[in-house]
Length: 173
Image (cartoon, rainbow, N blue to C red):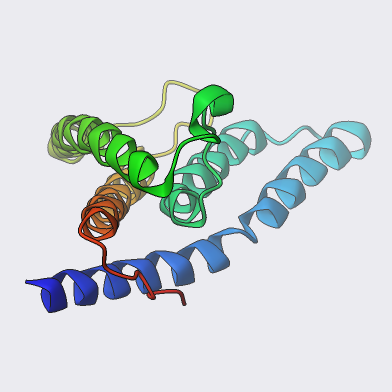
C-alpha cells in the first residue's frame, strides 16, 4: 500500500508540476490579448473578441495552474495558529481540511460534467455576447482543471496520511 501511495503521489505531482510550469506562461498570452485590445481600440476598429478571450485565457490559467499552486504550497492559509503547530498537528489538520476539498471537487466535477454535456448536446452552446464563441472548449478546460485539482487533492491527502504514519515524503521533483 505504501508503494502504491508513493507511486500515485509521484505520478500526480509530476503531471501537475509539468502542466503548471507550462501554464504559468499563460500570463503572457493574456497580456498579448489585452495589449491588442488596447492597440485596436486606440488605432483601429475595436476588436469584439478581446475581452471575452482574455476571460477565457484567465479561466484556463487559473484552473490549470491551481493544482500546481496547491502542490507548491502557494495557497493562502490563515497562519494565525498554523505556523506554531508541530508538523504532526499540521498534517492532521491538513488531512481533515483536504477531505472537505475533495468532496467539494467531486461535486464541482459532477456539475461541470453536466454543464459540459448541456453545452455539447444543444447544438453547441454559445456565449450571449456579440462575438458568440462556443462555450464547450472552455468548459472542457475547466473540467480538466477540476479533475487535475481532484487528483492533486488526493495526493496531498496521501502525503498527510504518510506523514502521520511517520514516513519520509521524499517525493520532491
